[in-house]
Length: 296
View 1: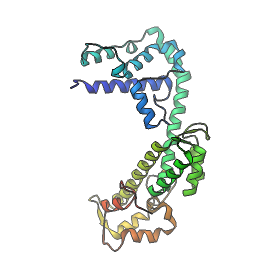
View 2 (view 1 turned 90 degrees about the vertical axis):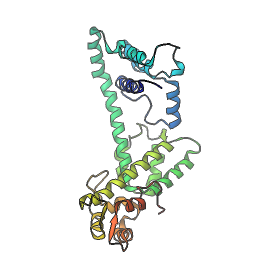
View 3 (view 1 turned 90 degrees about the horizontal axis):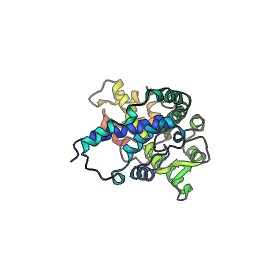
View 4 (view 1 turned 60 degrees about the vertical axis):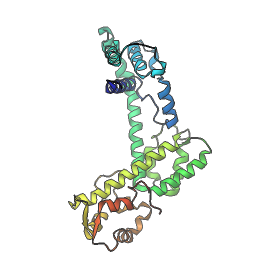
């Protein structure tokens, strides 16, 4: 029914990018829960705590607020959707006063870039955190981890970094790797800022992605692009090193079965069995790449 829905989405993306440049962080915190994200979307609010004191950013702030304001909070208007888009595209933010360009550039260079680098570094550390756990924890262990964290949280939807690391160490000895990403969820290690449910989902998604990647590596190396290869070639591929290192150099079998890395020879035999050929989809369904985690 809406003739130009894609324009609205594009403008919303521009508004979010503008906010990111102004505040050097996204509208919603990286540690937001799904409920917090939904609430912010319904309200259509944006916090300008540090940029609000800068007169040079008033037009940009007005543009962000106009775009993100939910329909329920907009004034009734007879303007059609296509005309509303034209109004937004001619917003004064896109036609700045030549005299304010210098002040905006100075503000961006001295303040915003520093804050933006901090946010970007946090995002990079969080990605590395998920990669470390994807290499060393199966879906079964990840489920155990978040069950124990949920009990420790005692109704709180968030936990602290120190609490999470102590529980992770019970399932896999990667403390030396986690020390490199201890700022992945903020500067304070004791503040309860890590959303349990959302982080659990992200961790499972990264684990599935990693398993699918290393399994396909086995078939790709053998040029078995049809998804079928001999059992002997598959065994050789499973004991080879991963091409793309996520946390540290590992073998394919060590990623697929992280809790039984010391028994890789036996586990390779069990995976392949007595079959003369091995299929890609067959391996996926038996490993963490499937939606249902195998019990082990």
